Image (cartoon, rainbow, N blue to C red; front, side, top):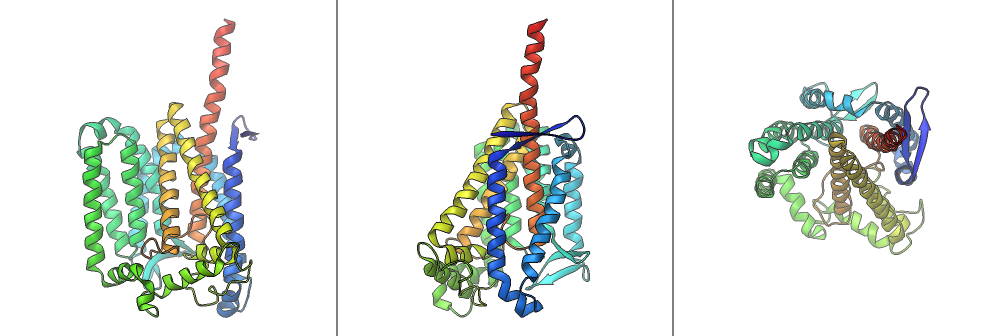
Length: 391
């Protein structure tokens, strides 16, 4: 179902009702669960139980304002400025590492403080990566199919970004942007054999990075049996699994969870899904997974429609967004359920965080823009045909 809204000018904007419904549902559930997981934390840290819920509401509001500007910007503009955006993202990754400018939290320097608001630079770089890769694949689609250089060239730039991310350190985000790049290259026509070789190379490098850093190896080992070292390396995952066990079928009730009460670290951010499992049970878990499934499915449907409508750049942007949403959601849920080693990746549109929430709102707005231009093109074609028929 498509809802058409006329702007103050001559342009008509086409909303996708399914995308609106699923996005709003995820935002609302996420906000309610962030509030539930952070009321006690606000009292302890800021002497204000509504400190985190109010700030999260402000994050969503600011994200919606930014999203409005994103949605009103034509895709051809994004295609033109894509390379500059990605280079700007690399500059931000350098700036955050400069002593005194980057904000250090839990041993990692990943944030810039702008006007009292912490922006996680890696989230901005993910969005810029999607736009840049869509433009690159659109411009060099022939080279991707004929030469391995067409694949390696953009990956060299992404390697620079990954090195900077690892210096923060932020291993999870570096994996995400590599997945965005490689997934877009594959959908853009890269040969399967070359793609598999690159995937194996990336996997080998990831293994080396895990072995090199003791804390990463510790996380990997604790993931296989978190209760073996319950009070140290396996503590966070053990508490998450306890939350899942307590939730059973329908949960203990909204606000009645115990694990969030200083037992489960980062309960309102990276481990929000565990709070959902405890308080809403299997029903809540399936509902959230179902909503994300619909979101990702609809993203790829919009990408396919754009591709069939002769809008390759828009299609690759939507494909890149789908890869990003799908992979990051899969990793976050997998970590919470003990299926993957612990990584610091937020649950899109749900976890607490100013930078993450605002960037995700912008990403959704970009997806709306892709859909609107594709729908507008479909509306124009019948008019052209009817005009020719009347001649």
